[in-house]
Image 1 (cartoon, each protein chain N blue to C red):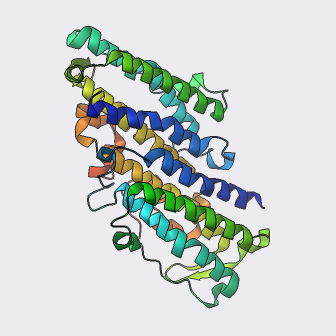
Image 2: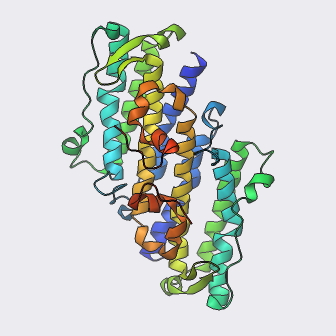
Length: 183
Length: 183
């Protein structure tokens, strides 16, 4: 496995453990608040990560390897979780994400064996030509992006409890004003 | 233990596990970049969390319970880690943080047994009167704030690798412009 691919897989393997350490069995008081107004609660974030395991990363890697740039990626529904997960407890979503990630990493290992494959190209319907290397880096950074959103929602759930210390807590200030900086 | 205190302690117990799941043994390629220009790398964040375990939360809780508002908190050096940790490997910092958090939670359990204690007041040198309840909520949100900073640094380490997908990745866009929003 190339160093690039090994680094990416290392991060991708961690994410279910990070999500579980943060959220499994956590009191509801920490998980009922979205990251920003009209944003996502932790359960929405985990649902979106589940959707991407099913419909995004592996189907797009397969499309690149099968069709190159001759057939664009299918669209990806960023809100598929809203209806699908409505009755599913958060702890079950966390387990489901971990199961799917195990499967997608196995599939990735089957799909990509050769360093040269990372330079193969596909066609994103809006972004144009992209490489498999970029897709895999995006998979990892997408994990980091959305898991950090969980932190913002959890912090926001206790916005009213920190009193005057809010002035020092960027994670709370930015929920009100993205450009805010702590005192 | 009151529900408020139990919820706070639940979160505080998680943080060392979250940090370890995310960072222990991770390839250096993920940890050499600060969250923003002139910001903190993951090792700086863990160092700062260590400093706060030593000099901030427990000494301030003790001050509230011993002196009330008659004697302000001592100042807290937000950059104590810079010189102290310069030669210490990241994995050792992660272990040190976990050891200290174990100790501070034991000490908290000794210090605060009565719900009514949470309303006791102390004096912050800049913010004025604060309660023990606010101090403990701030401890938890401070964890969330700084650990989310680790995610930004890790994402930033792969900023150049995602190609055109950067337009969709808020965690990268905000490193360049805090008010940026994904396409």
